[in-house]
Image (tube, rainbow, N blue to C red):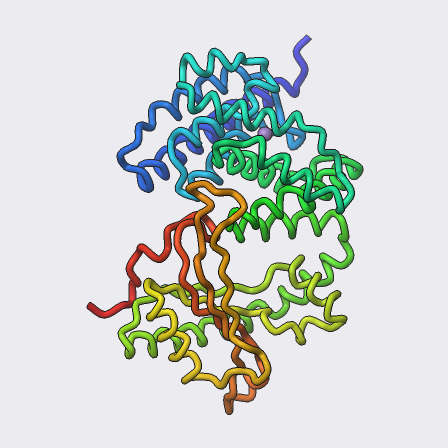
Length: 379
Ligand code: MN
């Protein structure tokens, strides 16, 4: 007998399908924009197969399972990854959840996609249920050793990121277990690959479930000061930018507020409040050549007096543990902490970190920064 809920349900279904289609089109647009020479048809075909295979599956949130697959692909498209990776992202749960044979994936999408999907499936089958912290390093090593193509790890990280973003729909016991695993295993892997934005979000989401009281207290403090932070960072960037232009140094600037988990850890370590955390606010200068890096540092020193006793840090992070294309990253990093001596009462005593930095390849979102020209550089 038809129940009254049938009508809204079918209505919802139509709406859901429309949303999924729109999300697919948006995904293909991103691919076209970042990788104009690549064939989007393979992604569209993967979507068709996935909608067949997962059609009767739903997420705990009540959304169609396809929405998860598309969101994972979007995370990777935003990192400017290729069509093969996006295809694998859409198919990443097909083997495990729909028993789609890997041989069929290979037939229809080629060996590369099949290899990626199989790799992600293997990681998922690893039994890494919340290992103790001292074992975590071994688990991370084992996981990375299994992988011959770094894109497998990227798909897995994107999968975990979307699962963490939708963790509120699971029961508390699972939330705890998954958050612990994310903090101990996946966030450090993201860090190792130079994906600092992904790492930050994974950490903050885990922190929210593992220590909700500390998380929400800190979140409130930072939110209350958000307008001041933004104004301060805008002003610092404007100052640096104008001086860099004067000195004809090509550069891009980035500003950030420290993530909550990283702030929390630092406060515990220093046994201090967050006003005492030196790098709560930071501006990064990305430039192209080593000499420009030093020149930018000089410009910054000229504007603000360096904090005495806090030395310039030069760290060589070449030779990343994962020797593969996407992990080739920062070669040398120069850092200088500086404080602002200003007559303005509002900003007085505010502190920040300035990094003059040269890096290439993967950064926060895998963008190739030092290859792009500064948009404010006078030509
Ligand atoms: Mn998944």
